[in-house]
Length: 129
Image (cartoon, rainbow, N blue to C red; front, side, top):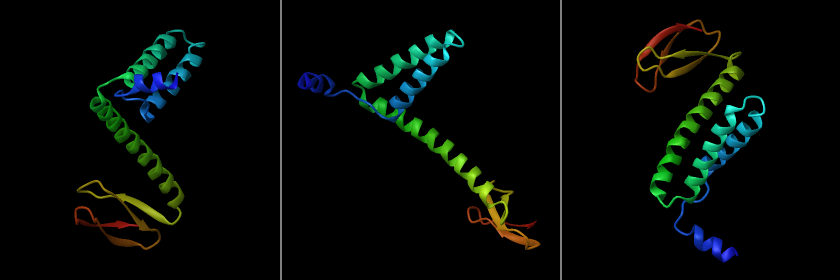
């Protein structure tokens, strides 16, 4: 039996983190469909799409989909890490945006009016900390 499954999956894409997220999302929607019935059909569509990705032979296209998902996921994770770091560091630092490139910068609190230098675009500007 195991040999048959191995031969069947040969050349197919298989499972990846995007499929896992899609499957969990579809299960959550199935349970939520007890509150609102149209969610059930949406959950089925997501589940079928996940199975389609798993059994697909177009490996390059599935990898491209995963890379796009990974890029979005890393942006979201980075956003929440930044918020967490800002929340932790607000007692000791002030946060500013560079007026030119919008890079987020931090400076120590309680230093009065200081010059802030942006490492990204080499712009200098003054702010009160």
